[in-house]
Length: 286
Image 1 (cartoon, helix red, strand yellow):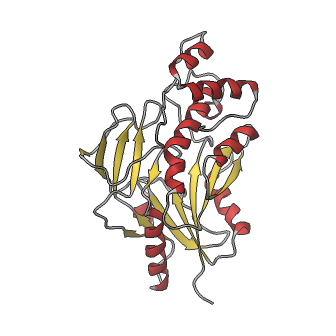
Image 2: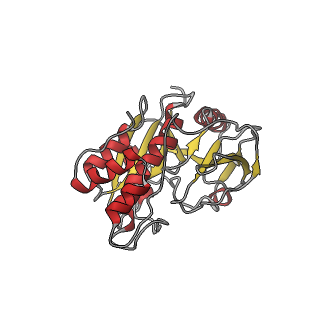
Image 3: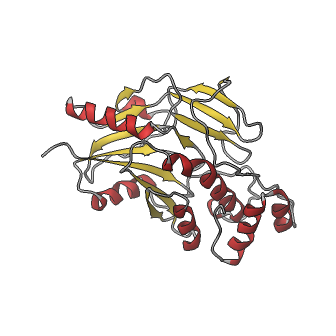
């Protein structure tokens, strides 16, 4: 029997990871904040989802981790953003370990001997050839008898600023875009077993050499790392975003949350905000 390898992209969507959205008003649980959730849906649908759809290599699955208290309509809407790719939600209780949930999920999801987990943030994007490169390096190293687990690092990427529409080339040895390859078992380490700045120092690592960017950090007003980094480029390695998409981050004003959100959001996003508050299904692009 030949080598069997199953590829996954693991996205932490709104699991309780201790983050505080820059537009959060401090009320309730940050990862269940309605404005953040609706705005994140627009970002995911505009930037992340199309990069998954455009992968040259098919056959991978996308696992999206949600807080278990997230409304089922919202979860369904997020998963429906990606067309032609298998997307599966993974529910994570507020105090549970999302890395352990990802690892446990794949034990029953596949019978492949090896699994490759690629980490990706829900507002960022992958180059069309990213998963194809993962497959090449993973199979090559497995066939060579790699020391497990193997981390595949992708240091060459780019940034995109949603406000100015500028791209920069960004080289970062400890980038958050990487893949962990290991034998499928309950004792798996998992791609989120270490932070991206440390994982390459903990495990056997292969660095992908590339003249073109393999990932893109989307810089916007409501993320943790909202500073454009790298050298400006006239032409990006690949472009991000759905044509005609408009993304605006809501500005909160105390006591007038709904009015402020409607005034500052793009029309579809504002409509989804109201639908979310009313518990109605949300709409994707027309």
